[in-house]
Length: 93
Image (cartoon, rainbow, N blue to C red; front, side):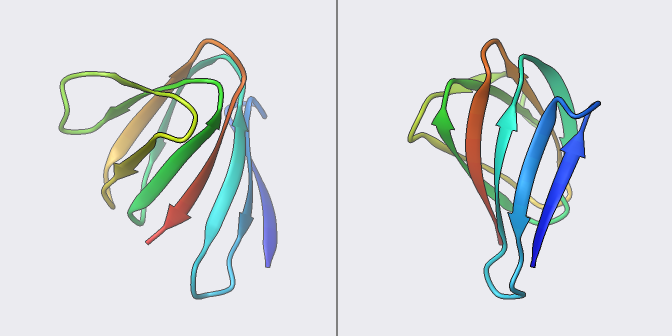
């Protein structure tokens, strides 16, 4: 099943595929700062641009570039900050 999700006034959009086995989403983030909450563990790889990430429990932001991966534990809040339109692929575990 495919589902288009829009967040923060449509400035962040993701297309999610969930077959009940290995759900994932691909997304585009326009410049800005955004906060989210992870229900499941999220393993995200940047595919274009750069994404600065803050994960609840960490005191620092960390920048990720294309092909770099970060993990957000389940039930944690996290923030994205981007200066240029960027994209990602995220696998839910």
